[in-house]
Length: 207
Image 1 (cartoon, one colour):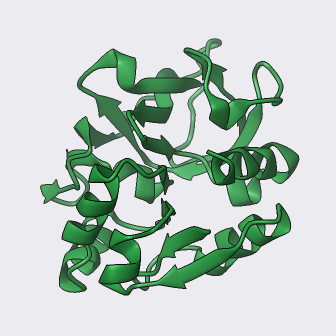
Image 2 (cartoon, rainbow, N blue to C red):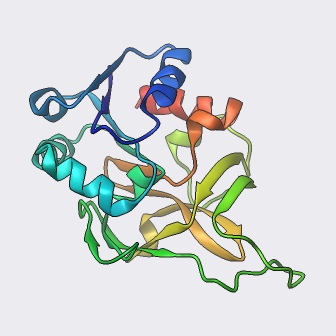
Image 3 (tube, one colour):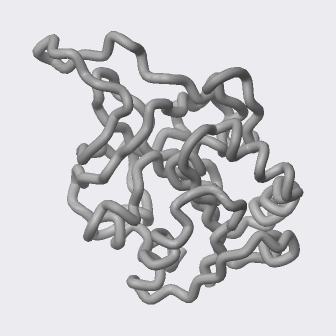
């Protein structure tokens, strides 16, 4: 059973449908007991870091999330859901994250450029390849450098390099996937990434 944390923000129906498409049983809920006792937990998110973090705390979901992670169950943060795993973000002020991955979230530089010196727009939007830093069951049977779909202006910087699971190049090499113990995060949208994204979600559902 995949439990999707429903805190009123995020592409909830899209990711729910994607998991259903790969054959997973899915529960979408903001019930703290169900979240705390979940078998596998997914934290989606779109929009501003601070608004997402505030809504999680307004609904008193933070302790349930930490309880579930402490039990060792597989946990996946998606897009802003990945950013929320970090200690904090400087998006429109200072905001506290969940503290599951040591590090910070910050905005892409305004002067981003590609290898030929051409200016790159922020937000980073579209398909990009990722480079995996080590083997992971999340990417089992996927291509060596899989394409995923990104939409974001901010990116996480882990305090410890070993928590970076994959990188992506957009003017700079930024962290596209994180992993610490039973906690995973992806900056891209697997539910919008066609076959590669569905394969990743299927792999997560089997962890």
